[in-house]
Length: 155
Image (cartoon, rainbow, N blue to C red; front, side, top):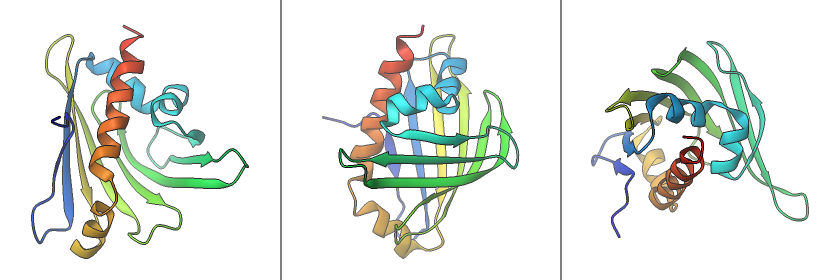
């Protein structure tokens, strides 16, 4: 089955271009990416902090059934334009591929559809390729499918 979220990783480069068209109005897509309760639902993780503003930050955490932290991520917001763009850092704790810089752009296609483009930059090509060894493409596609399903219920 073809993945709806496209991940373009050009050979020898240190970035990714991730694109996905959603059957969601622009405002609803943006809301699903910025409201903590919605992010928790489609990502399946707790939002410990989400400050949607310039110089704001976020912190995410997932624990297993025994209370052990199995995923932790955080970052700083550098630009925040409602229904337009978010520029932020993204770092997974204890991941060897380090901090990434994400440029997220939200685009209205029609009244009922929108597009998310994420340009992610890594410190090196080797670090980007290390991240891609994980089931990253399948994971982001799954997350975006969940985002569309959960946000779609709010139409």
